[in-house]
Length: 367
Ligand SMILES: NC(=O)c1ccc[n+]([C@@H]2O[C@H](COP(=O)([O-])OP(=O)(O)OC[C@H]3O[C@@H](n4cnc5c(N)ncnc54)[C@H](O)[C@@H]3O)[C@@H](O)[C@H]2O)c1
Ligand SMILES: [Zn+2]
Image: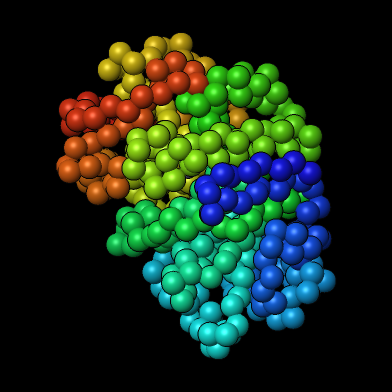
């Protein structure tokens, strides 16, 4: 088992990474000073039949006397204001007595983690929660750093809070049941870390893509640990995303999020981010921040991973994408802001990019 610390003073917590950790979940909570005896496991309709029973057994074995379950619909629809409200209903119904503090266990991908974390952070102004990521994307990204929330009014992640989990338990054995498409989608975030934060990781991915795509346990463990180390380091410097550091993790996300919403479910988060990274790199080239060679390497790695570099979104949607980007949280006081690579493993933010240039790179990635 590998252990990575997220150092945030009183809000510090460990990330545990290994295979078969779910069986020992209850004991791990105890070892990490969670003394509560009740839990609400929030999970989705795909993950529940696969891993709820195992989770419940492990929690009971660790001394949790009461374990309730709340299942949300799978997919991005689970991350809505309505589902947030349903999750609050479940918390209120199962734990009406303020004397009983439940631990919320987010068992699933990024959708479950974002929703459950938001509910945990707002129920009675905050009860403890634990992230148990079951997708590659959530293992390397969303389970760490405390960003939680839901989509609203067709804007991604517009309602939310930063609320850190008490523990992250990443059981990589759960990735075995992940579909090929979702696994590759998670690889988009892995490639993101290499592309703008760590040239060595990028080279490792170029050299070892085959074994990673074959889900080799050893390679996967190393790569997940490397990614969460990068994320922990970024979050430690800029937990609230206000110091201009955490924004690096949004590489590919400004255009990617807008695309994801415009595609209305046709693209996974990782697929949209893949296209978004190509668009952002094209922006970097146009602004003389990086060169064609960087784009070629990124494009090749994404292609070999089986990720899209262009998206089929109806013509009418180009305007919708531009409009939805203007509502992006990363745009401050009406000025746009993008993360662009300045070479593999390096980055910069650019602001006030002319609208016609943005539109050009967006249109270039639509087919
Ligand atoms: N909070 C953050 O910092 C952060 C960072 C990145 C992404 N996100 C968010 O994360 C979400 C995407 O996360 P995701 O890609 O994990 O999506 P997801 O949670 O929708 O999971 C993808 C699919 O895989 C299924 N699934 C999950 N685990 C499985 C398993 N072990 N076996 C079989 N099927 C399984 C799910 O039911 C779902 O259908 C987006 O909403 C995105 O905005 C948040
Ligand atoms: Zn992402």
